[in-house]
Every structure is written in structure tokens, then in C-alpha cells.
Image (tube, rainbow, N blue to C red; front, side, top):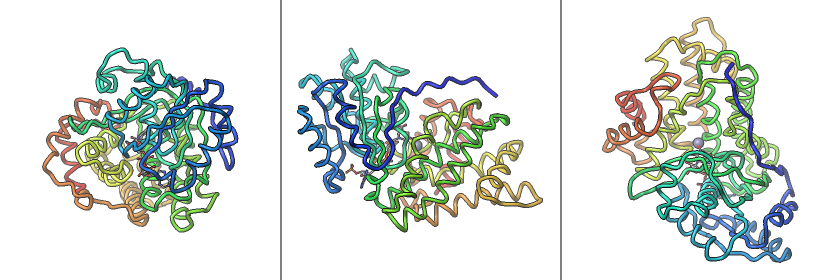
Length: 389
Ligand code: NZQ
Ligand code: ZN
């Protein structure tokens, strides 16, 4: 078992009605609030009105940063930083999915960044940065941005989508009822993202971090059980609550404590797809993961034990032939994503071979794929992309 540090300063209010803690959560930081949100879902659901009522009754001054894109762009970060500077913002309130929270995190850090090129900050300044305080209300179960310090920002001019450590939210309000309105497509993609956050760390060489592996398997089984329910019954509180609970812990590092790091290869490959084609993050991961699994199992059969454990403990499969069992576990994952109606090939999301070389080259530069669970070369990455066609 490896060493680890537990250091998550975020206060989480989880459950129905927890927005009652919004006023006190903001007030501790001041009265000037930047309200950050996306393309309008919070207006359709009524959450915007609910938030504004609390802010108006509390005497807060509100400046709005609206229209944050899925796969948030550096231009939105720049706009947000400018608004914070012009309006003496004390605290940022992000209301939305991972994209809104990620953009808000970069805005919080960008406020104190002394250079004038915020893309340089995203790309080169490593580690948690000095930041404005961030409070968020999550509306989509997927990324775990509400419980980690990371944010992923896209630059469409350079075809780059890069993660960086910005800041942990000071407070996250997680009310599963706010996810009732999430579409089937985003619910499934978000859940694939949750599962990927687990699988990226689960497939590690460390064999004896028992609590971490147990948490990982429990989260996977919970998503496998609750996603189909949420797709059938979008306002099933228990299903939505379990997905929200899972998303928060899944990307927090807790399911990887005591384990050797793995470089999260599928995330590296997916960020290339999104950077070039602006696709939904969870969809890209669902397409890539089973193909990556088959590829590494073939490349390094010594990792088979991990796949056997995955097949038995996550999918409840049994069998004498371990290689066959390993493959059946991967097939079960792929079939699960298909049953949840996630597009399962690159051609279905209009991606061809045209940028494979460039994307593979880039991911090998920005991610330590040579230190992955099974190390990957540029040629391996191209082969995995090709298997996804
Ligand atoms: O923009 P609005 O109108 O709000 O609509 C959004 C968006 O179109 C909609 N939506 C959100 N909540 C809704 C809703 N629609 C109806 N009802 C609601 N309650 O869903 C669409 C997708 O939203 P988005 O925020 O983009 O999704 P997600 O939460 O999956 O975030 C994806 C982004 O997070 C990054 C991804 O790469 C991607 O850029 N990630 C962030 C991570 C982190 N911070 O730790 C880790 C992840 O691995 C990931 O890379
Ligand atoms: Zn992810």
C-alpha cells in the first residue's frame, strides 16, 4: 500500500432542500457575488429564480457570468475574470454541471493571476492556486468538480483541452432533485464519466489497498444499479441521490488512496477527442474504455488478474477460464453502455481518422502514458483510436 494525503477542504451540504444553506455559505465571504451558469438549463428548471430570490432577500449584489459552454472555453474564463475585477467580487457562485464549476474555478484563480495570458495559467501554472472563494450548486452528476480542485478548460484555437489544479470549492450544495431535469443522454454520459473516474484508478498495479478497491467496486455497482432506474424514472430521488453521491466521491482521489497512480489514460485520450471535436466528455470515455481495456489486456497479459477481479466483483461473473472471464467483464461494460443508449463508436459521433496522429502525439506530450497501468506509446494510442472507429 502506498502513502497518501487526505486534504479536501470542501464543506458539502447533501440532500433535498440543502439550498437553505446558500445564504450563510456566501455571506461569510462578502456581499458581491459573481453568479456563473451555463446555457440556460437553470432558467428552464426554475433554479435560477430560486437562487435569485435568496440572493435578493439576503441583500447580495449580483453580477452574472452566463452562457458558459459545455467543455468550457478560455474566453469564458477571461470574461469572468474581467467581471470579477470590474465589480469587486467577493465570492463566485457556480450553478450548473461540471463545465460551469470548472470555468468558475479558473475564474477564481484567474482573478489573482498576475500575468495577462490566462491560457498560460491553465497550461503551465501547476498546483492549487491563490483564488477567490467558490460556492457551487451542482445540477448534473458526472465530474466530481464539486469535491476536487481540478478544472478542465478548452482552447479551440489551439485544439487543446487541459486540466489544471485551481481551487477546491469552499462549499458545495448537492441536491439530487436538481438533476431530475437532466436529459437521458447527459445522465448516461455523466454516469459513464463517474464510472471512468473509478476505472481509471481501479486498474492499478497495487494489489493491497483494500478499502480503496472496495470503495471503487461499490461505486461501480451503485452506478450500474441506479443509472437504468434514473433513465426510466428521471425523478426517482433514490437513484438520482445515489448517482450524485457516487459522482462526488469518484473523482475525489479517495477510491485511489494507497494505490500507485495510473496517469488516467482514457481521460488523456478523451480530452484529445473533445479538443478537436467538442464532443461530450462521458460519451468519449464510454467509447474508449472497453477498447482500451481489450488493448492493454492483449499488450500485457500479466494484468489479467485485475480484469478477473473486475469481472467477478463488479459484474458478478464466474468461470474457470480466467482469460475468458476477463474478456466477459469488458464485454459486460460495453453492453451496459450500449443498453444505456450511449453512442459506442467514433463514427457515430462524426470522428474519423484525420487527426489520430496529431492527437496521439499531443497526449503523449501532456500525459505520462509511459507510467500508466500498462504503458502506452503513440502507436498504441493510434491503435486504440482505430479500434473505436
Ligand atoms: O449549459 P446548461 O444550459 O446548464 O446545460 C447543460 C449542458 O448543456 C446541461 N445541464 C446541466 N445540468 C442540467 C442540464 N440540463 C438539464 N437539467 C440540468 N439539471 O447538461 C449539458 C452538459 O453540462 P456539462 O456541465 O458540460 O456536463 P458535465 O458535468 O459532464 O461537465 C463536463 C465537463 O467537465 C470536465 C469535462 O472534461 C467537461 O469539460 N471534467 C471535469 C473534471 C473535474 N473538474 O474534476 C473531471 C472530469 O473528468 C472532466 O474532465
Ligand atoms: Zn471525467
